[in-house]
View 1 (cartoon, rainbow, N blue to C red):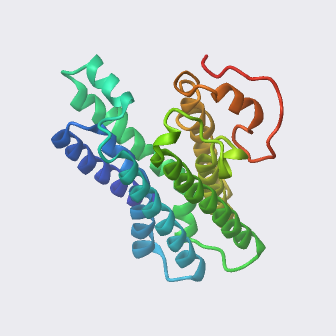
View 2: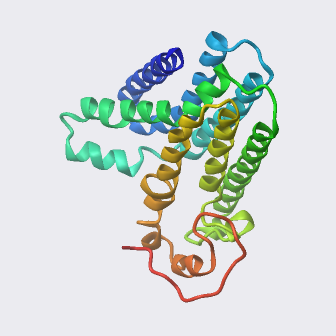
Length: 262
């Protein structure tokens, strides 16, 4: 129970501060930066308050530190100078008078609660870690695969976009040749890897965390949400869909173009 209380205090406290920053900047997109930073802070709060310096507690702390800081720095660089995300702009335009209040609960606190649920394996993995075994090593290996996919995928996409000759083109090089969403697949591996460490400690019930994250990544806010509109914005994306796996990496394939604009 102490794990959950600590996490809620950190998550909702951070989201309140971020909301205040968003009001000052008139830009709710700052919430995106708080996702990686928030999980990073949760890991450190649990470690400092509840962990006893065990090996796997420290390893998990290092894992979430690298993941959280990398993600936050990447989002800062990606969003710099691009203004507010279209989703929050649409919400602001729909209810300008109540946007400040609505965004606090529907955007910031909602993400704080999601952060609390997704990080369940991290919380209990740090505070009640496994002693040894093969399972936590497999978890670390899966985490490293995920970190590779999301780090390299993000770097390749940023490099591709930086070349003006690629404006309007579909990124289909590097890892993007084998999956349309290497960054989201990487996140998937990271959180299932963290869960394997918690599972080795007997915390099987924390599976709700990676299950929720999987739903977010594959359907509700990650790949699924992106592909609802990208086909209209990127000529040739239908052909890319026909030859490239949607989420899990695999060899390029041949086939008829599939519409993704529904």
